[in-house]
Length: 87
Image 1 (cartoon, helix red, strand yellow):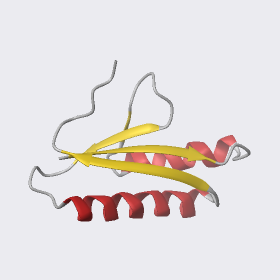
Image 2: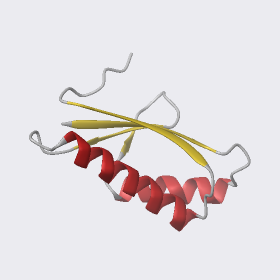
Image 3: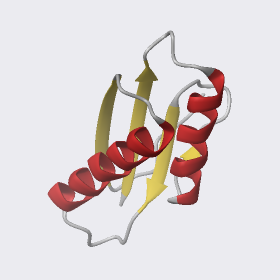
Image 4: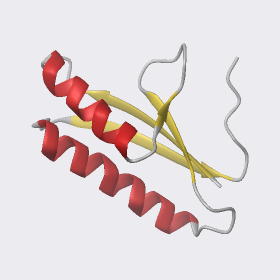
């Protein structure tokens, strides 16, 4: 099971906060997709419950935002059994 997260931080977010936010996601095993800005994936167990994956994704983003001092963001998550296709 994969979760794909697309994330936009407020445009005026300081680089230091943005970098810290991204480091926290990396520490939680999120992988930033190459060539696409602000899109991340994370692999979960194949039999993971979709609602739990969504809840864990929200929690990861909330923790990263709080730790980095980011107060405004927009996020979209999609959960599915196939790894997203990049092209």
